[in-house]
Image (cartoon, rainbow, N blue to C red; front, side, top):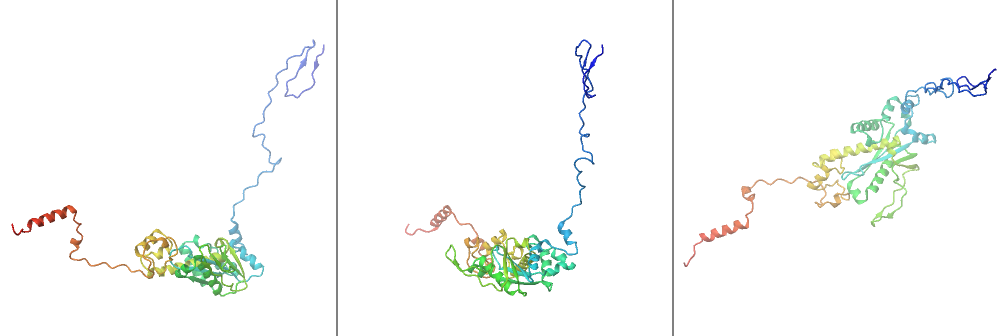
Length: 350
């Protein structure tokens, strides 16, 4: 009898047959299904997801923009925006010397024309201008010399001495120095960009918490728009240039004061409250350039005189210096000497 074959299956599956007696035969084991390997499951380049793009060489966006025919410095963005709206003279303002214990506070107002960005000789200098605190002293000196020797750069400085800082406070002194330098800058500013969160103008007189009276700000010297910019010396090139000029101007003043008031190390620490400076004040006393309202000066038990302090002269050695330097006698030694004196004294009437 003919056998009946089961329904067709895939070749790789085991087949079941039925014999002539109607019994189901055991399936014949077929080849085990193969699991596709990880390598075979990878997509081919032409199918499915596209392959990742080849890595491109990294470029610095600042250097790429500066190497173009129209270089644009990142710290010039705000100034360029103001220039597009018609501004022709943009002045940056910053200060130096708010924290020291000695010396004046200096402010500078600087106008750096945008036309200098297109001059290759000036561009290499402009690229180096950043916040003065991030520059080495030699770099600040070089940038100061270039800024002050470039005819198109306009700048002015303001100065408030230690005595006036003690009479008002350091904030009011800084605002006065900023006001003075803006008044003295040669160009008529359209916009003034001030580092910090406060402007030198627009505040009425008031009474402070300690009962003292804060005077009103002076009137604004011109019809310009003033902008307070927090951390402006790190964001705007004109403000950074002002920080360089203010810092170098004050450093040179402190080097001159170091000659006038030797022994305090002013040329080294520039009047800041270093351990060396505070120790010198304790030993020699304050001078006319020290700010007596600043801590720790106002809390120090020391001479309150102001003015040049000369070192005390050494007294010449006396002939009895060895006797003067002898240690004092103890009470026991005094009693022994008194007893010896009594024994040597003659007793009359005996």
